[in-house]
Every structure is written in structure tokens, then in C-alpha cells.
Image (cartoon, rainbow, N blue to C red; front, side, top):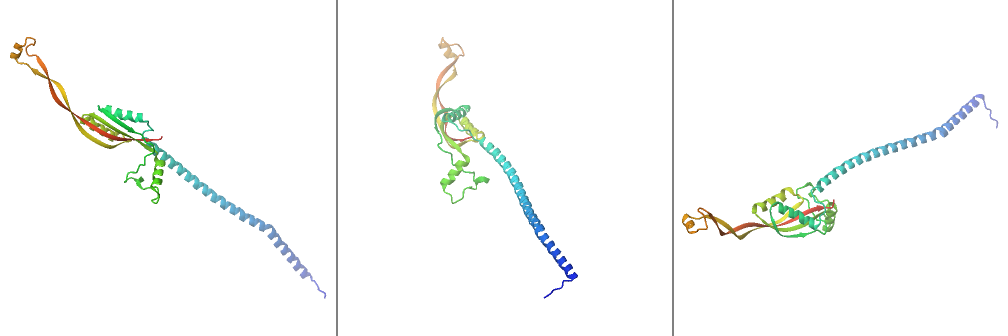
Amino acid sequence: MNMTVTESDKKLLSFLAAFLLAIAFIFFMFRPLTEKNKALEKEISEAKQQEISIDMSASLSEDMSQTEQAVREQMTGVLQRFYPMLQSQDAGNMVTVLMLNHSLQIQNMQITMPEKASNLKWYQYSENATPMVPEEASQEEKATKSEEAFGVYAARVSCTAEGSREDLMALVDDISENYPAISILSTEWSTIETPATVPVTEMKSEDETDRDEETEDGQEKETPSTLVKTTGSLTITLEIYMCNQ
């Protein structure tokens, strides 16, 4: 069977071959570029997401830094309300100075130093009164977390002092108003009546002076007299709060 290829067929075949070559060129040349372009777009998108994440982290880091600074300043203010860790003699000297400043005589003093941190509770109407530990947690866990959070220790001092009631009241008022790190746990008031012999001056009459050659006219004479001296006694129990600063 003979086939006759005309000039028009040859031209058609030439166009077909050129079209196939163009398709092959496009397929083998532009397809890798398209895939590379998609890969670059994906990398750009990931880079933008990473940039956003870094910006958010930087913003959070700045906020955390400001929060940390605020908490540090707050903690510094809180720690200033407490005494540093004291020895028993330091606590005794502190209470002794307080008593002597109010002209009181110390009769006895007993000091109990803490062995572990105090389990303090927030004031019930404060914002921090809401427990941070879940309700299902045991009491030991709450106490442990409280000790780790605060680390506040309390030295207990029981003291009996004597003096006027005004001085004793001034002592209690002074501790309540000017010593926030000292808590008054209990007070017991009592009155002590002590007999005292005091001299009483009297004037002698003219008849008495005539009979007494050793005395002069109008000379005053002191005679002993017994009076009852009333003093107050205060037995007070204090807690001195300390913090391991």
C-alpha cells in the first residue's frame, strides 16, 4: 500500500512536531520553575508565620519582664515589712528596748524560736484570699506550698512588765501602730498594790517649839506615813515575723 505525502501534509506534520516540541519544552522547563515558585511561596509563608511568632514572643517577653519587675518591687515592699532572720537574743533585745522606752520594768521573758515557716493565711477580704491550690489538694500540700511561697517565720515572745497603766497602754498602742511585723497575740492586765512608807511634812505649833529646845520656831518636821502604791502589770504575748531575705 503506497501513501502519498503531499506538501500540505508535510507542513502539517512540521507544525505538529513544533507544537509537540513546544509542549515538551514548556513541560520540562516551566514545571520545575512552577514547583520551585510554590516552594518559595511556602517558605515565605512559613517565614512570615515565624516572624509573627517571634514578634509575639518578644511582646510576651517584654510583658513578662515588666510583670517580673512589678512583682520584684512588690516583694521588696513586702519584705520591708518583715525583720530579717533573728536569733533569740536579738528578739529579746528588741522587746527589752521596747519595754524600756516606755519606762517599764521587765519581770520575766520567755522566747520561743520557730523551727519551720509559719502557715500564714490571707486576710479573708483581700484579693489574694482565693486559694491558689485546688480544693482537692490535701492540707499538707497547701501548707507546703504556703511555706514555699512566703518563707515567713514567727518568733514568739511572752513577757511580763510592770509600770503605770499609762505607760503600759502606750506600749500596746506603739506596737499596734508602728510595728507591722510584730503581732500582739494576747494581753493580760492586772493591778499590783504595794505598801510604801513615805515621809509626811507637818508644822509644829508654838507651844511644842517652846518645850523642845532643839527645834526652832516654825520648823517643819517629817514623820513617816504608810501609803499604798498602785502599779499595773501586763503579761503580753508577741509574735515577731521574720523573713529569710
